[in-house]
Amino acid sequence: MDLGAYAHLWILFSLLSAFFHASRLAVTKHLSLTLSVRALTLYVNLASLLVTLPLIVWHHDFPFEDRVYLQVVLLGGLLSGLGGWALNVAIHRSEVSLVGPILTLTPAFVIIIEWLLTGALPGALGFLGIGLLVIGSYILALSHEQEDWHRPLLRLVTNPGSAFTLTAAACFATASTLGRIGIERSDPLSFAVMVAIVNPIVLLTLFSVQDRRFYREVLPPQLARQARPLLLLGVLFALMRIADQIALSMTLASYAMAVKRTAGMFSVLIGRWYFGEGRTRAKLIGSAVMLIGLFLLTQL
Image 1 (cartoon, rainbow, N blue to C red):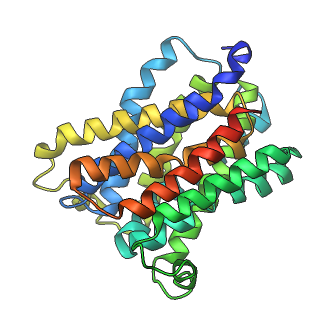
Image 2 (cartoon, helix red, strand yellow; image 1 turned 90 degrees about the vertical axis):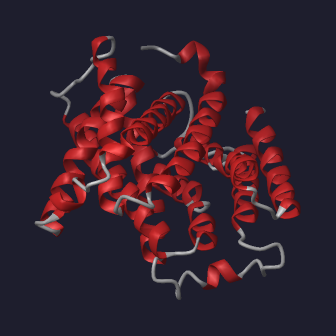
């Protein structure tokens, strides 16, 4: 699946990934009231697998004889699964005002990891655009308009969920870079299928080893009533993953991940329309900074 002729569309797919990510967080908020963190994490990946697996009919480029490809698939699937679990734990244990700002560091992690693994670095304009996206996303994540800018950073060492948040950011950063390597050896949709297969296997193994009675969490009495939102969540998660892989096939992982942080802007809209959330001034400032950064990246 050669997308080279459409390389200029990477920013569109990154924005779609951001939109699907913000939407799935809204559904996750609803489901977290009735399902445990581990069960929700597993079901999200299983539902995503059901949606993604049919792609294998049209896209099945799996070079298993390539040792690098196998390593990238297994390690990438492991890290993305662990990252999703760590993020859910962080959201459960921490304040959103801590989780949000730390996740804005993900593009910075990607720049370092991508340079170490592939030797690729953004250009000067790319660095500036990424920086503005990170700053704007950080402003959006502040919990109150009057909050001092440094307080979320101080909570890094005081909040019980900070380690999980940092773990999630590092896992996502590494997985996205590995994903770009794997895509170069197959194609975006085939790689999305492989990651969708590996993720639930890794999570089921991890959770079963962690707690032998995990099966009780997986089959709660209210599970049948949550079938529709779980399927919706799986669809959103699968679409996010597919958009991610396509964007990664067209540009640097650092660019794709930076634009994905615009999920904060979509979350602002969703929060305003569906949950009546406020903080309008801070959100407008953060969104404006992110839009400037986004504009700079479109000039690459």
